[in-house]
Amino acid sequence: MKWSTVVAVALMIPGLALGEAQPAPQALPAPGAPRAPRVARAARPRAAEQAPAAPGVVSRQGNNWVEEVTGSAPAAPRIRIVADVGAIELRGAEQREVVYRVRRRVPASSEENARRIFAMQPVRAERHGDVLVLTIEPPRGRALPADYQVTVPRGTSLAELETRAGLISVRDLDGSIRAGTAGGAIDVDNIGGAVRVETIGGAITIGAVKGKVEAETAGGAIKLVSAGGDVRLVSQFGEIEVGRAGGSVRVETAGGGIRIGTVAGDVFAETAGGNITVGEAGKVTVATAAGNIRVDHARLLLRAESAAGSIHLGRCAGPVRAETAAGSIQAVIAASRGAWAESLLETAVGDISVLVPRDLAMTIRAAVQMAGGQHRISTDFPLTQRGGQGPGPREISAEGAINGGGAPLRLRTVSGNIEIRSQK
Image (cartoon, rainbow, N blue to C red):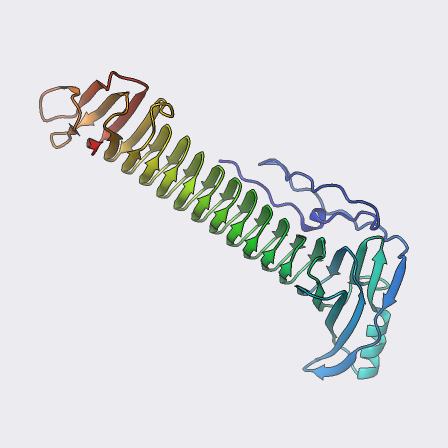
């Protein structure tokens, strides 16, 4: 199995000249592609409007001096917040301006020295075309650790958030989100546009999103409650959960279970180790290197593969291909005559049980390749059975045309029982 590499956070929000139209997000790298190096941030153009915040309130907390800076700025269609080290919390509200609170800290010998350091790194809210940029620009080196709490007009069309280390939290925005952190969790909810988030290390939690969703983490779980569009989630190590999606869903994890609810489009789900569960979707393709698979309802083609685990297929309205190296297979065929096509259920070690519509035209071919004395092929249909005699391993088979015959249903196990039942 191939796994997507996690893109460096800095590349997700390119250092373009603010004030110029930004291109559409670039496609994620192909599986197996090398990680792109971090690029230096582009030089900032001269701001059309500059609004350095007034000095804040300074207080002593433990070994650090802490400054709390508050301010406001006229709203812009888009906002960009850049923190060197620290958390970013963004909220949308019914208001016309941007209100911010920045809390930063520095170890210093006295309040005077602390104020001098703070003054060298002012908090700035600058307008570049249709973008308001909120950041701290140090004269040299890295900026002080700072946490941002920002409230913007709910109708802001795009929010771009970047921190090298810290939590990112976004709520109640009608527009879209692009966010990246090199170390920290991401929490997003109630977003009217699209969401694209990445973290090098941390969990990602996404609530209700009306647009499409893309999320990647190099280490952590991903949970999505609902999305109105397509979904793409990738974790290098962690569980993935999707509640509902109005488009197609593609999820990949190098280690962890996958749970998917109701999907309007197709589903592709792959894990190197863990169980996979899918509620309802169109075309379903699922694979796990070690774990069980359960699909309750596939409206089109269904493909399921496990290297070690059972496969349970609830309602298959199209052709089926299910394979496991070790485990049982259960399937309910619910296809119409026009939707049915050649299908296969195969396990190396385990039983196969299938429920077939009484009026569906098909040809059944079943075989137990190394049957012992206790292994059987049992069926409600008039199939011709063949098999060798004696207690030792032998091949037994059953074959027959149902309702005049049609596309074959192949059932194969090396060692196990096969049961073919008719739906009443």
